[in-house]
Every structure is written in structure tokens, then in C-alpha cells.
Image 1: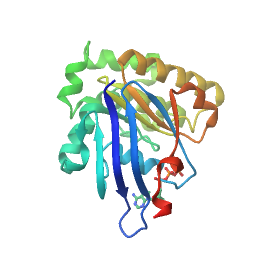
Image 2: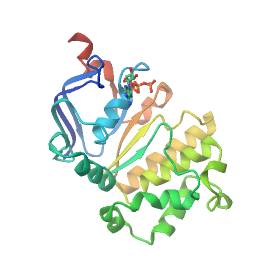
Image 3: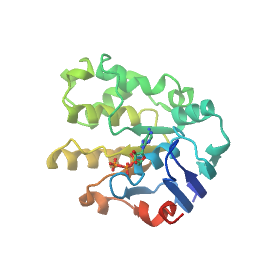
Length: 228
Ligand SMILES: Nc1ncnc2c1ncn2[C@@H]1O[C@H](COP(=O)(O)OP(=O)(O)OP(=O)(O)O)[C@@H](O)[C@H]1O
């Protein structure tokens, strides 16, 4: 199976802070769905940021889909992320005054690669994903700041899935949903990832979700920074 993530002796510290992550060795295969858990502040979001190339490691090697992110410039990492990753941020990072549809199609602006992977016009694909994620059609032309947090979470998921990225990264995407909506959201996210052949890396404190994933990883088992 193709390697999705390959990490060797990866170290990271935020400027002026003690080492946060030192991961000697970590491998994920393409097609896996991975649940990453760990205490608050242990570095889960930071690890996702490194995997997406938002931050860069201080030392070591991080290969994603066969590309070495640690040897890329910040600009090359931004392009790589735009082309190959769909990211559901903890705070969504939606554009508040743009409509729901504009936010979802914005995933394509910086990526010819994602535009080419569409099998129908961008707006039709955005409508399909929003429908799959059960967001009411009367909301689709509304500016996102008028939506509830749970509705915004689904917009963020639809944006992340646009253009069939090889990897979807989700940082606590169900934290604002009630139990019924959470189950529906997870079912739809898994169905879409399967349909699109997207691997999924998912951070959450909600241990009830663990059985859905092909692999559960505890960050403290990977990370030797606290031992340094
Ligand atoms: N942009 C940043 N600049 C400086 N320090 C940061 C930044 N982001 C996170 N940190 C620090 O890195 C540490 C790990 O934070 P991170 O958000 O990665 O943890 P987490 O495990 O995802 O936490 P949570 O479960 O609460 O979301 C914290 O001490 C935090 O203060």
C-alpha cells in the first residue's frame, strides 16, 4: 500500500518554548482512517499543522504522499496543501461574509489540481456535498456568519471535501454537534471519504468515535519530547 505519512525523528518547538514534539518514527498507509487522541495541550493540533505544512519541523523528515514537506519552501507547502489536503479547522476558518456556496467552492481557487479532479461543475459539486451533509438548501446563499456553529461545521467539512483531496484532516470537527447530529455527521464524513478515496486523519477528545476508525493513535505513545 502507498505510504500516506512517513515520519522520522521529527522535532518541533514553538518559538521560545520547550520542545513540544519529538516523534522518532510513525507510518500511515493510504486509505487509513486515523483517530488521534491525547490530553489538551499535548500537541495534537500542532501535529496536524505539521502534516498539512502550515508549520515546518525544526528537524527530521516528514513525508506526505511521497513528498518531503521538510525540504519544501513555505510557498511550496501552501500549494501542496491546496492541491492534496482538505482541512477542517477547529475554528473552521470560513470567510464570514461570503455565502455558504462561495465558501465551499473557495477550496478550488488556489488549486488547478482540485479543479481538474471535479467530475461536474464546481457549484454542482458544492451543492451535492452540502446536500449529503444535510445542510438545508435555503441556507446555501446565506453568508456563513448567519449560520449556527453546527451548520458552519458542515460547511467547513464540505469545503474540505471539494476536489477529492487525497487526505482530509479534521481537528475536533464534532465538538459543537449534539449526539444525533454528531452520528449523522460522522457517517456522512466517512461515506464521502470512502467515495472519494480520501484518507482521514481526525483529532478528537470524543472516545465514543474511536471504533469508527481503522486505527487509533495516542499522541503520548508517539511523542518522546517529554523525555528529552
Ligand atoms: N500558534 C502558536 N504559537 C505558540 N504556541 C502555540 C501555538 N499553537 C499552540 N501552541 C502551544 O503548543 C502547545 C500544544 O498546543 P496544541 O493546540 O497543539 O495542543 P492540542 O493537543 O491540540 O490541544 P487541545 O486538545 O486543547 O486542542 C500548547 O502549549 C500551546 O500553547
